Length: 397
Image 1 (tube, rainbow, N blue to C red):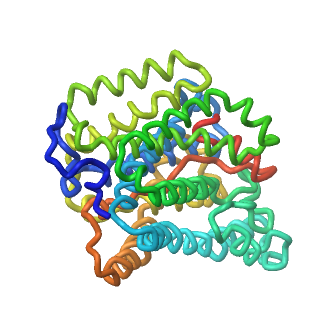
Image 2 (cartoon, one colour):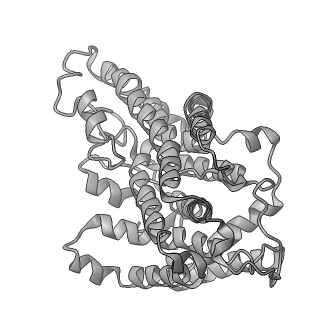
Image 3 (cartoon, rainbow, N blue to C red):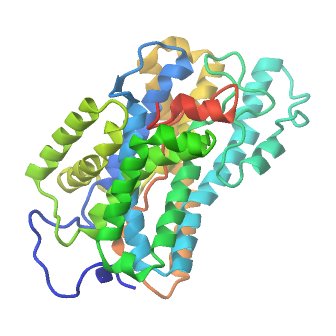
């Protein structure tokens, strides 16, 4: 079913602004900036430095994640509204899973062995420890990160016991994919703007009452984290279903960012989520005015930057580079992450997506060419998976 079924086929006039041009925007550049913002955010815990930057209870990485989910909501809803359930799910799995699996493999057989060798002087015991490389691969294969160390490494670093804390959020990203997949089954949701608009409002209300919901779900932390992220994803969805009425213009774009600032500042517990619609609009508007280099327009390495940066930073810390300070540690990590991200894009992500799209008879809309980076913020915990999520949760602080 065409995305046009979300509204009447009759020609309509936008209230203001212009539509987001799927072939002329800077979403790749914005996602790349957000991915590097997460890298910088992680430099604080990974170097043991105090005074991490934050606003309204959220770190730099947390706000980057908010932006990621807003962009993702817009693009993923477009994908779902333009495809049947089967092709949609195939696209989503192909976009997120293969690169994730290769990342797990690289951690198990490149990053962690080096860390283990530096710590112990030998690889004896590496493959037979309780959290062995094989156990790491199998336990985490379906996005839900059950543990973050391999054979107890990394050791002797400021943030020990976690090779890649960024990966935890991919599980919640995929849950958002499944939610929009399920909602898209219903004709009323696809034909009317209001179901997703109401869904967004309900997620904000749920976040405002997260304490009560937490008690009713027996302190299920997955629910808490998901409720913190859903408003941003649904904010993007709302902007998509209203796209024939609400265009992008500099005045509401600037006002949206200012309103987001005021709301998130004024409401201490759930203001961040209440500002989600304005954050999403502001970021999507920025993509219509910022210019991006042709190289970035054709190559989206933001997902690779996100999934490899943490491991690169930890490997740097294994060799003591955290003493360089936040700035140079971040610069070194960024420079060394780019080759991994580029390889992921050129050898894994792009070839698989081309193969998937080429096997379909129905042409994928242009907006799919800007497949969102499943992202998020996170510094994983040493003690457990749950404390990892608490430590670096992008919206629950």
